[in-house]
Image 1: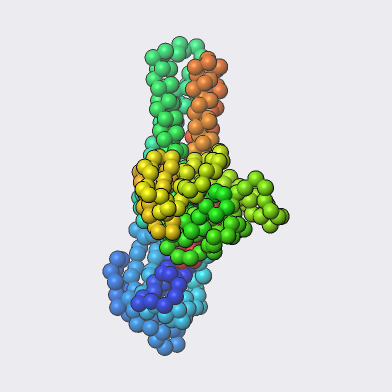
Image 2: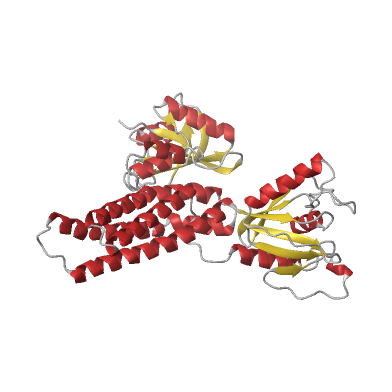
Amino acid sequence: MTSTIIAPASAPGRGGISVIRLSGPLAVKVGEALCGRLEKPWKLKHCKIKRKDGNVIDTGLVVFFKSPNSYTGEDVVEIHSHGNPKIVDLIVEEGVTCGAEIAGPGEFTKRAYLNNKIDLAQAESVADLISAQTEEAALAAHNSLSGQFSSDINSCIDSLVKSRVYVEASIDFPDEEVELAELAQTRSEIKKQLDFIEETLASAKRGVLVREGFSVVIVGPPNAGKSTLLNALAKKDLAITSDEAGTTRDSISVNLNLGGVVVEFVDTAGLRKKPDNEIEKEGIKRALDAVQGANLVLQVFDVTKEEKLDVFEKETVTVFNKCDLLDCFPEDSLSKVFVSSEKGLGLDRLVDLVLFKLGVGEETVLLSRRRHVTCLQDCVDCLSSSLSALDGEEGLELVAENLLAAQKCLGKITRPVSSDDLLGEIFSEFCIGK
């Protein structure tokens, strides 16, 4: 028999109210032991929350959600108490003495998944919605939780199944002549699904960045004003600035909310061909390492000096700093911008260009995880192989095999088979009570 679990469903700490959730076959029994007779489902009842000895722990509200019309798909009871951690602990402890068990991380949502209330992609979006740090991340997580992404993936799976049925029927009945028109229609449908998955993959890659944040690395020669630029963007003194070159020896970073997404700006040591000592040499090495993991590089120069532009295998914006020393600001472009970090001039234009280069503001279909990207990429590879086999007349068996593999790749996103290890890893990321 499935156990009955209990845990706070609201955030830890003090507040106006806290919610303690019970789920499982004994939820009603334990709920009534704590709060007295329950009302009919979905109706709140004022109650005294008592111990077995009759002593009152708190006064609050209780509500019953009858299976299967609940978050987990099981009988669920939620108790609303005052938001004192001591009171919450006492209620949970009393619930355990009445037959419940403490819920593990993500166990309520895991039960919702196992009871077919939500699929795995929606379950992951619950955790993403809770941990979202920006407006765009929250909206994207909600889009996934609503089920639109899962619906699109399942529709694609259904289409691939139909294509497999036709291909495998043609294999099983070799004496029947394969209709060229039907074969062309099957190819057209596979290509249609390939195009859809490629579009979804591009969106998913952006979704990963929205979820995890973008990285923008600031590089340039010594004394170009990189640290001053970081401080100006952050609107606080994070990095030490000085007229003396080489002040920054290690990387300094700050996370900023720009355009509804988290962007990490990293200030690095000044780059030059001949470092003075081993410390400066190590600082330059760390700067170049940071560039490798960046989504965008800001290469900063002192506009009053003629210095050589370094070439990076990354999207790069050239920032000419100290423009307050010029008679007038030159005109910006999509690859360069003129600012004065000291005076705060041109920074709005720089931020706009950074967001444009990062693609912030484009529609995000879902808040994705890296495993979604892997599954979608594997599916693209399989569908591409199916089309190649079909066009090259390499045999329908190879076409069918790749279609089946593509179907399994998509299935891993919403409802993977034999997924105990995967489920354990995913739900371990959740907080207690969700």
